[in-house]
Image 1 (cartoon, rainbow, N blue to C red):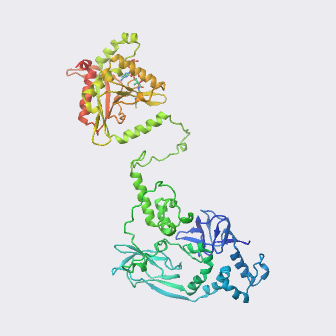
Image 2: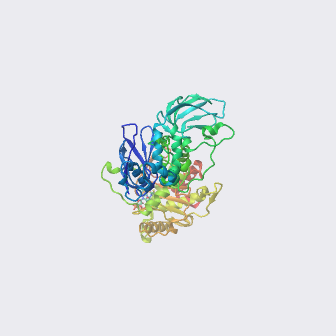
Image 3: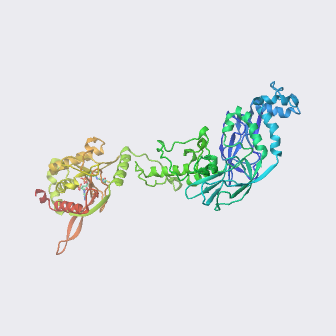
Length: 597
Ligand code: COA
């Protein structure tokens, strides 16, 4: 089998152009005129059709390469017919070239005429005999006037889809017009070369307006007819969008994409009118929005304007479903893709909520770094914190409690504490006082119902306490705090804190809280704004107590003041409620006798 290296035909420019798509793969059986590559220059995208039929042996370029006229692109093993034709061509001068017994088929001269009826066996030979007049046919220039546009009004030329010198096929869009109601293509009335454009973008035009001067190539029709038996044997060649004789501009023309839709009510059919303003039936969102879409045959069909628009919008064309013939991607497809993508990002979802993503930064560019894996607890905490922060509108109320007397009392318990082997810190006092405050202000002992119409009022008082552990933050829950005494609370708090640090808490011991206390008193700080442990509606932050001068109405006196801050979910709790809750709490902490009331 003979092989042939296919090269880039005359591009009409010495400039290099980019290979943006390889349309075939080694092993592919290709037909004559089948697109091999798509090239892109500054101005246009072009198919490079194969001049021969056969099997692709090697691809000699790759996407992204720059090529020019004459560059070798693909090696093709010629199939029998093409080879025979090639041999037939040369047989005129060298009859002995045939190696596979096809010499008789390739006979030139008088025998050729006899061979003609067997056109299906000798398509390319037949074609070659007909190609002669194709180039020598007398050209005729004709002014193409716009047909009936289906409206008396003048419409705008919004796009010229071809340039002078372009070869256009019958039906290929020469330009695009736009009225108040619709956008319509202006399809070429026949295959021709564009000799002159008689309008420019922005012009107003109507039926009868001279649009372009076209050079009809008389032989073109004959050649097309002669192609029929050849392509009848190779149907896929017919399916290619163009039967170009060289690299011709593949403009972004809906006529190319969306051939004239019949419109019996007007002359719109003559102009390939497409009702772009008409709403499309809603399409369901793809189950996998990011899954690539491929046009028929795995290729992406899109014209230069669409490719340009996709580049500007950053849309990967392989993810866009084309609605044109053979899955060709059109501007509307891009618009729809972008709308759907935006819509999806507006749907609140885990980690989404329409928030712009935090960019990934390569910190190693600023110095040495290492990746430290998160513990499971840290990872869960991160998710929970974000969920709580995004879902609950937080307000934080600040106050401070005078715990001078409380501290005196706490210290007075030292001996008993040692005897009981229970350490009493301010925390059990805070638990007791908070439980009393939750009973007195029941709106803090609620959760919001998911129906948005109810609160879930809790008639128990279970309080969580934040514990700092080496593996992360844990919140064990002390149950029925309102029913327990100081020693019991001190003991249970210490036990749960130890269990947390030892990694021995059960899931049940961390569930069911209706309020949380987060104490950084032993660590320091004058105040902080804690994040609510949703679905609870409030959390108390405790900072470091210190002796401050406090005005007693007559003079400044030294008092031990405990900074407290209460974050609450403003959907469940109002600021005034928070003020009352904190006043109550600080009063109890300021005078423990109030617990008796
Ligand atoms: N002001 C001043 N001193 C305080 C204080 C406060 N608010 N709270 C506690 N202290 C003192 C204690 O009295 C104790 O001192 P002492 O030994 O002289 O009596 C010392 O600080 C250490 O107390 P600690 O052992 O931490 O007990 P605790 O009952 O105060 O706290 C935990 C127990 C479990 C709450 C605590 O160990 C913890 O883990 N806190 C971190 C909570 C956290 O990380 N919160 C942030 C969440 S985002």
